[in-house]
Image 1 (spheres, helix red, strand yellow):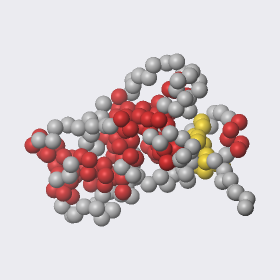
Image 2 (cartoon, helix red, strand yellow; image 1 turned 30 degrees about the vertical axis):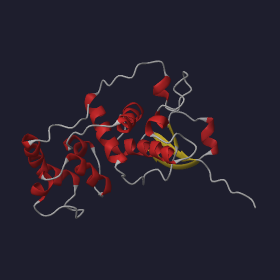
Image 3 (cartoon, rainbow, N blue to C red; image 1 turned 180 degrees about the vertical axis):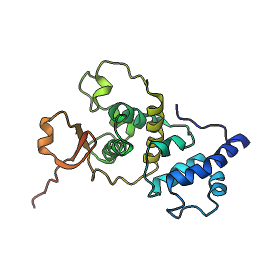
Image 4 (cartoon, rainbow, N blue to C red; image 1 turned 90 degrees about the vertical axis):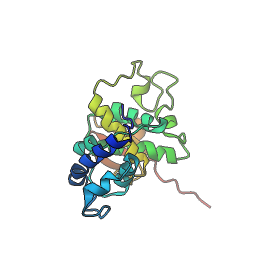
Length: 209
């Protein structure tokens, strides 16, 4: 769904037209990342560079920002992250979706979970109701009925994978919906409550000499 459009002359024109709106919506000029002649500078950027700059900018991400982004080809990791964001958090704000993305990426960095996004997202999916993310083993086929929501999830996934700072959940590797109170949460340290989700990290274990 999110893929790279042609990078020939037509693509360059599209990015040039896109430039002025990009400055207004994403704040790259305010962040000191482009010159005053923003449209001209943005027009020279490859789509990948646009995502890379967003990953390190202080610009607030919202639906309008993501909708204006150029499309990119997604690799397997981005597709897996987009899938999880769509099914786990498409009803959340972009901030709420970013928080869920943080949990997944924090798990990738942890020795207690698989070391890839796809491995984390699909962990335990071999058996029904044994997976880490319930949508993956609830017996229903994954279908993307909300195209715009999926495209936004894909663009957000690409930005997060570019290294966007994970500053929302304070290292969380678990979360649950506010509507439930799982037993495991009592053993965890709560780090944040964003939208309809509560986030946790495993408590620090102090070793004795």
